[in-house]
Image (cartoon, rainbow, N blue to C red):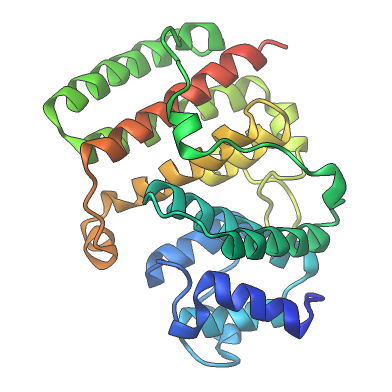
Length: 285
């Protein structure tokens, strides 16, 4: 059972919109995927029917049944999803909402055993992030297999063509694909560092780190940040790209009413370029 006070639960109820029965904008399948990819737990197991079958009620049962660390990890990622969604939708966050977010982050950090005073890092606003210049990013410097580099360069060229053609969804899906391919290639060359990270996904029963082919893009993002290959900005916005890529499934796109425009596509490409730029600077160190 996670050590969360009733007053603290009320804060998460508010920011995650649990009174509606939903959790943020997740559908049943994306909520299952989110939890499973993060902590390898099936949120639709019958044991989470403790309070009922809605996503919100299953999350409340999850708080009741799981450990501090697991609950803290899930709550922190949910908060990042909330913050990223607000940013990408151009929703202005009021001071009261920002304070609520900061309070909830502190609670999640406490559950994770993180000292909040040592966890302060500047995160760019969306405008600051989008205004960064990434003119000459290149995957050639990432020490990937030459055959993979050729394929990835071809996809980068296609992304640029799709942006010019206004094919927004294609851009988003391909950006996620290229990012995952880059992370897998780097993880393969830095196997020890990735496997030893505290953020690496593990088999719930054995505690052993999962083989890379079972890692989600979310896991690669979290571990790359944990071992200092990407900065906090890139981690934050990469998760938004990961979320958008889930809409490759037509029914997910329908249930979430996701209709990407070319500006969303350009944000996704900016995320990819920022990730490559960070990796260029850090991967050889």
